[in-house]
Amino acid sequence: MGKKVVILGGGVLGTQIGLMCAYYGYDTTFWLRSESSIDRTTPKIERYSGLMIADLEKAKALVGNPMGKFLYPKGLISDWSAATVESIDALIAEGKKNFAEKVYIELDPKKAVEGAYLVIESMAEDPKAKIAVYEQFKDLLDKDTILCTNSSTLLPSMFAEYTGRPEKYCSLHFANTIWANNTAEVMGHPGTSEETYKEVVKFAGTIGMVPLQLHKEQPGYILNSMLVPFLSAAQALWANEVADPQTIDLTWRLATGAPKGPFEILDIVGLETAYNINQMKPAAQQEGTLENRMGKLLKEKIDKGETGVNAGKGFYDYRK
Ligand SMILES: NC(=O)c1ccc[n+]([C@@H]2O[C@H](COP(=O)([O-])OP(=O)(O)OC[C@H]3O[C@@H](n4cnc5c(N)ncnc54)[C@H](O)[C@@H]3O)[C@@H](O)[C@H]2O)c1
Image 1 (cartoon, rainbow, N blue to C red):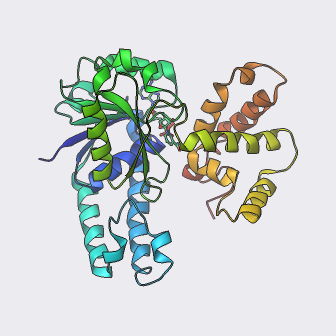
Image 2: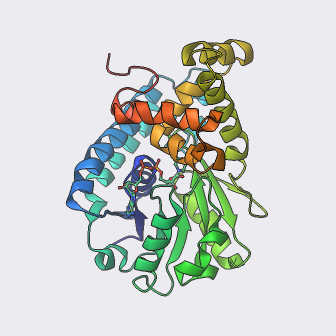
């Protein structure tokens, strides 16, 4: 039996992180709250594992193509320069086997984390819910288990005292579509031990990620310190009725050469996450503000089930 990794939460990111762990041979357990969570997470496991295998299949056609090095799924193939059709076929076979044999779902919190080497909390971006879960787990974790949070906007120092192991706790933050966009930002809080930090950096490398080391706490890490203001600016243009999402996206793509515009990115991130981030701004609670209007517009789409790529529809329709 290999090392065990546990993911708390089986949402968009939790599922992707867990699958990368399984792909690289870790025994991977998703802890979920209820039977109904299983019904929501199982299709995500199927969808993301399918997408990973499909991207490996597509990569075979890129072997020998000079553009291949920009397009291959970086988290799934460690050395592109040595990749051949046969080596990718072997990765596909091993990946499928690991997805079938190394992915577990557990509802019982104690059983879920028993014997875990590392636990990654990837629950909704809600501080109260995160604290409740840390308190629920703090006496259940083995003494040596490392605990990480994948929170995008909250600092580990906000939660360290609730974990029961502040020295073994830090942030390990992934980007969406983790198997292709393989960044892992590692950020300690002032009480994180050097040993834990180094171990988490090492772990990230073992699941196909490029560990990016932050020297101090920074809300939003490196990526979201840039991305969140960008996406908010796009939503403000939309909420202020300056232009529609498609025109805003087109402007960004044409003017910068970027492959995706802000609303295409929001569809990948998921509108619930965008909404949760919006709701944390004090102005979002005040009637008549632009932030309040942005929140209402996002909520209208969420209520219609248009939550992004995962739902088949967001700002764009992906069902065709
Ligand atoms: N979506 C992204 O692009 C992205 C990128 C990087 C990091 N993150 C971070 O990852 C975390 C999860 O985000 P996501 O996009 O996967 O969200 P999501 O809404 O898709 O999933 C959240 C998961 O948490 C579970 N959950 C919610 N409340 C809970 C509670 N009280 N107890 C137990 N489980 C609970 C839900 O059932 C679900 O499985 C957040 O902290 C987010 O900031 C998200």
